[in-house]
Length: 314
Image 1: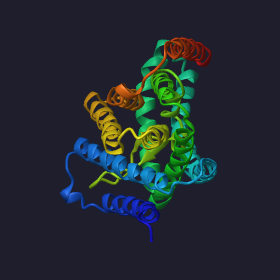
Image 2 (image 1 turned 45 degrees about the vertical axis):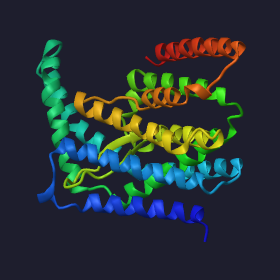
Image 3 (image 1 turned 180 degrees about the vertical axis):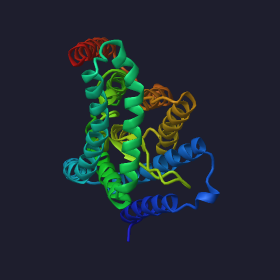
C-alpha cells in the first residue's frame, strides 16, 4: 500500500491517541497550568498539521477537496450544535440569579450607580452557577474529539482547495495580506471578539485536553489551520520547499501561542504565519510593476472594507 494512502489514517490515529493520552494524564504528574496549556496547544498544532499533510498527500482533484471541505462543514455544524445548546443553557441558567439580583435592587430603589456596584457580585454569581452546572452536566469528551476532527476535515478540504487553485506564485502575497488583515480585524474588533464570548465559539475553535487537568480548553481557530493548508499546498504546488515552509508555518503557531500565554490575551496566528511565509519565500515571490500596483490597490480596498465593516458591526 502506498505510503501516501497510509499517512492520513496514521495521522488521524495519532491525533486520537494523543487526545486520550492528554485526557487521562494523571493529575499527580501535572505541570503548572500555563506550561500544560502550551504543551496542549503544541500537541494540537503538530497533530493537526500532520492531518492536513495527510489530506494533501492523497493528491486528490481540487474539486474533491472542496467536497471534503463541504462534508466537514456539515459535520462541524452537526457536531457543534449539542455543545452550543449546552453552553446556551448554562449561560441562561447563570443569568437567572443576576436577573433576580437586579430585580430586587430595582424594587428597593437601588438604581443608577448602585447597579454598577452590583455588576461584580452578579458576575461572580454567574460564574459560580455556571461552574456548578458544568460539573453536574459535563461535556462529552468524545464529542469534542469528533468535533475537532471534522473541523480539521473542513479546514483541510477548503484550505487545500484554495491552495491548489492558486495559479500564480505572486498571488500568494494578496492571500497572505487578506489572511493577516482579516485575522487582526476579527480578533480585535470583529467576529472573533464576539464569538469568544458566545456559544458560537464551539463552531470556530478547536479544543484539546490539558494534560493533568480536567479542562478541555478552546485553543486554536479553525481558520488558522485552513490557511495552514492553503500555504502548505502552495508550497507543494510551487515547489517552495515543503520542510522549510512547514517549519515556518509551525513557528507562527508557537510564536502566537507563546505570546498569548505570556501576555494572557488572545492573539491572531495568521499575521505571524503570513509574515514568516512571505519572508521565507520572498525570493520566489517575484512580481511585475503592474502586479505591485494592483496589490497595493487591493490592500487599500481591504483595509477600507474592514474598517467600514467594523463601524457597521459596532
